[in-house]
Image (cartoon, rainbow, N blue to C red; front, side):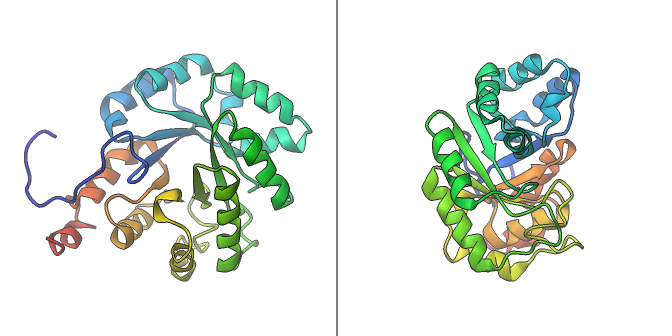
Length: 254
């Protein structure tokens, strides 16, 4: 840090499994990645190349190398897994992960319908060679799961070999754990936390109000995902209580 401030919440250190910030890269150029790493790399724990943007991204190898050289893990979005799977190309998906030397992968079913037992089988198979992040929840706003169902799905996916489970919200933050207004489904989150360990969940929270809500509920070291490129540093200030939205929250805890 550039100077000293007393009474800030303690942040976990990288590499960390709690307090993680997952940035969503929706199509940055190589120069933009270089600039991002210079400014925000220290506060970024993992990068997702959103949905299937990796299919159309120019200079993909060079982009992946920039992130890796900066010590930031990177992975392809779960929609790419679904795009391969729905076309009967699971083996080709695995070859693609190998081709790009991926260490992480995402297994999701937000855009397709798949038997959950089969989804867990894919998680277990991929977990033998990759660090698997799985996603629970649908991108379809009309599909609303009861809290007990979220818990069942998350428990099963963690048992199958997922390193973290993502609570779905899309990049817009208006489905899954949120109402279409972007408001948090508070009862759902509370129920999930009665059974699923906090550190195993990455809460997708693309909107500032959502980030603030989770930080106030779970503290500075909550795992948050789908963070926009320009929001990584603003999020860090929220975590530290040096932005107005969380300013009093942490002072009152000292």
